[in-house]
Image (tube, rainbow, N blue to C red):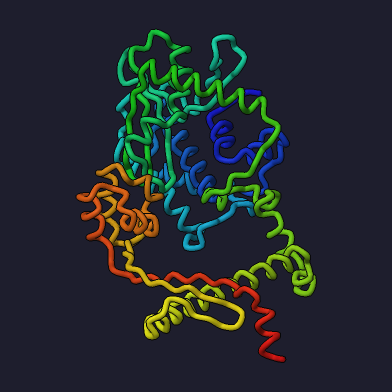
Length: 404
């Protein structure tokens, strides 16, 4: 098997998707519109630089006209739009915007001399030549002798941090290939063009970083070649997966969606799912009612001045104690508390801000008093009722006596 950045990234993202694509060789039944738009933008930029190489520069209007022609010629019914708030024409316009911004930024495109477009590279990642990597560089250019720029065009809406760019592996693999092809090169600069934002990221990798990536990649390849199990990994990226219809996570949804109403409601899986849903809803309702009864028992016991209440069948121990309610991590009031816990290196001890765990720490005085005082300031008094229900001993005998 020949490896690539996309192959390795797919395995990391979801081994089951990797199996569909690279083991079972199942063609993708659909194409996401983000990918479709990105491909058309890439093709337009490739045409732009190809014409420049042949001394036939394109005007901005010619560039956009070429993009529009590509869009119309290559549009097909399998293009899938996941984001309901976006229409195909809006994606088309977004591609136009990417090209317009790029054109304004770099025209007359003389920052460097183009060496290759969609330049194919192929090299061994290991010293023995067992594992081969390949890829295609969007554009390879040279600003001056001894320096090579590796360009990559991104049309996605995600805007990365510099740290994420500096740990991105795709162009680092291409750097390995370029170093093999032109060992006399003094410096290689990796450049990402985030076209939607008209922003250029740059990164330079040293020999130690590339060696660490090489070792890590060999280990991943060896894992891929030895595995026989390809589990599904559910993530937000599943919404854009072209294999949902055959994926174990989503296949049942598509199979049942095609059924007529009577058959749909009689389908065994649907029946079981609905049954579980009803039971869990009832359980949630019961939990709410149980809490209401516990609070009522606490109020009654406090009013009577007792600690236990009885029926013929059960005994209930009741205790009230003071507790503190802390804001959870997604609540606005939690910001200061999060800062404090991280500064004191206590963040992990409370399960990333578990209010119940914090209250227990305060009640048990687990931490040092000065820190407890600071934490206590973020809590709000919230009296808690503790209730324990036990069956009364000989309850059945007592009932029998009463009814004699």
